[in-house]
Image: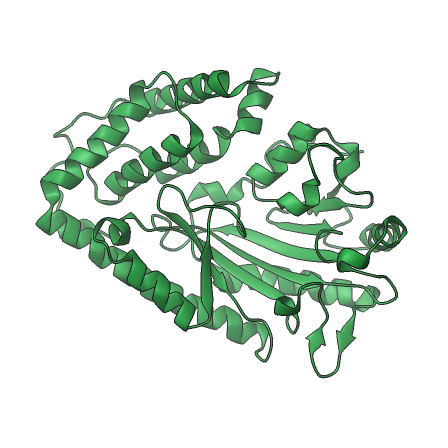
Length: 373
């Protein structure tokens, strides 16, 4: 059985900050939901249905060009900490983990392709959920990765499909294409200039929605938003991806303008916020995760505005993932109670920032609004 010890870096390629607009868009994700004919899905699926689906998927994997050399992790076969690490890396959802007492339901699994960033969730809300996670704004590329896998899988497995409605899914809102595309964005400029409410309201008016770090049901912290499509019926996958891409690029323009306004009209206040955030991260002895995310938001803003020279966006992305509770426990080799976890988090951040080199106030040069990408 494969586990995270054999694939320690899987799901981390999106941290590299290599895609378009990486200072604002941390990552792009595209996933499609599929179900198989002849098996109950959704709340009606019983253990025998899930086991049968997993068996059929395992048979497909053995002959798949894209997946045969990957790792199939059955949720019941890996320990609770490894399952939480998968969640913290955004490779699985809370639904796939099951409840704390009963553990994951039988037949649940995640398939990690040998070439990151493709993965497949088995027996989550739907039988199969194919997803791609990439750095920066790369919706078309992420869709292409999922589409190739979907085409190969659809030739071997009998999808539940209706000639009028399209792909059938557990949740009615996913019927049609079954596609959900999302862009993980950092929008402190719009928050600080108090324009974020108008932007979020506008997203709803054009068929988009927003969520927090872990997707549906999670809260927004640190000015990080996941923007995604709401509807999947009546449009093609390409239409949905193009629409989201177009709107996200508008939001990027609004955020860029808001950052220019901060430098022009509130430079001293902005600099103070940035340096306070950096100072706390650099020297704090205890950091709850929510406080860390809020401080990271200020530091990311400072990097974008060229107020903090020498810091890389990759470093800040790395901090965001490796300071989550399960990752800290993995590094410590044991469970950590909350207070101890906060201390380990602060120590990790201090080490990482020290390795980057101390940043001194006033060393950022003459930073100008024209420098903002």
